Length: 142
Image (cartoon, rainbow, N blue to C red; front, side, top):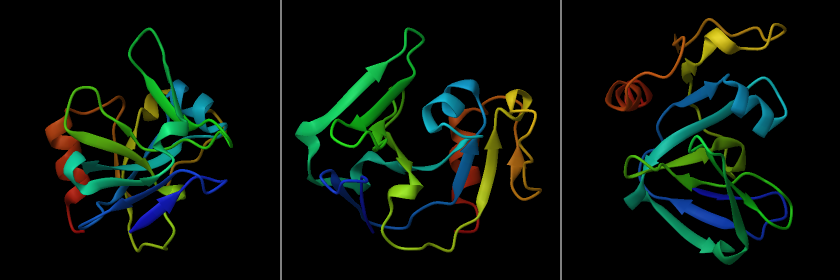
């Protein structure tokens, strides 16, 4: 599966199965996406390969460790490594092909926007579950 940013300068490929998706409704993801949440998945670091544009990726790190990687030309968020585990965060809107996946989890529903209506599908977490539980949730029934 291939993906790219809005201008097409940053390209990547994921080999193997793509896990189910999740939506994060935390205040940081709302700001980063400019919407009610971001929709993403996690893949093992060994499954992501950069094809082009890695040199134009910029990073911004908040003092609490939140990291946002983005294309310095078009501003699209791009995959970035998790600091605590061998996984990459993948914004699924960058993927080129339509996938038949479900939203398996909703994170930080306790801080969702008042106007945000969360679908009844997927496990809802008030905050962030532990990483092993979260990974298991994303890989269930893929």
